[in-house]
Length: 87
Image (tube, rainbow, N blue to C red; front, side):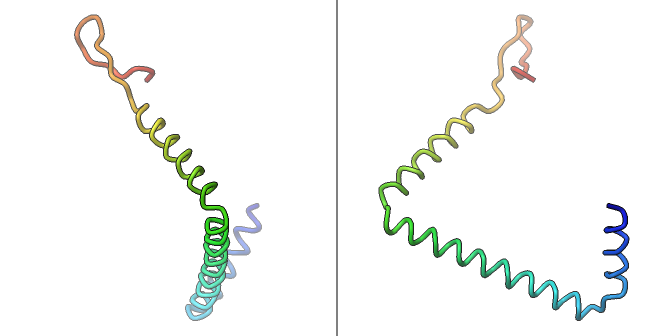
C-alpha cells in the first residue's frame, strides 16, 4: 500500500499543472457523462412507470419521516434533571 502512495506522490511531483488540470477535467467530464446517463435512465423509468415511482417516493418519505421523528428523546429523571434517553 505504501508503494502505491509513494508512486502516486512521485507522479504528482513530476506532473505539471497543465497535466493535472487536464486529468481533472477528463475525470469531471467522465463523471458528468455518467450522471447524465443515470438521470436519463431514471427519467425514462419514471415516465414509463409513474405509479411505481410515486409509490417508491412515498415509501422513502415515510421512512425519512420515521427516522427524523426518532431524534434524541428527552426524559425527566427522578431528580427533575433532563437527560437524553439511550445516550
